[in-house]
Length: 71
Image (cartoon, one colour):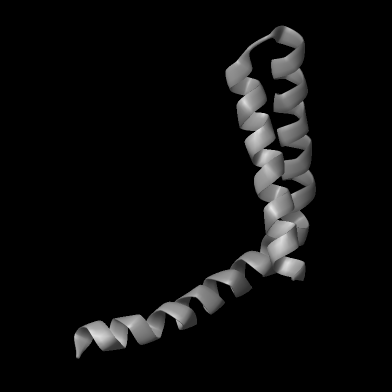
C-alpha cells in the first residue's frame, strides 16, 4: 500500500517542483546564460576544455529548461 501511495505522489511532487522552478526562472535565466557563455568563451580562448564543457552544459540546461517550461 505504501508503494502505491508513493507512486501516486510522484506526479504531485513533480508538479510542485516544476511550479517552484518556473517562478524563479525569469530571475535566474539571464544570469545563468551570461555565466554559461562566460565559462564557454573563457574555456575556448584559454584552451581549458573543462571550462568550455561546463559553460556548454550550463547553456544547454538553460535551453532545455526553457523548452520544457514553454512546451
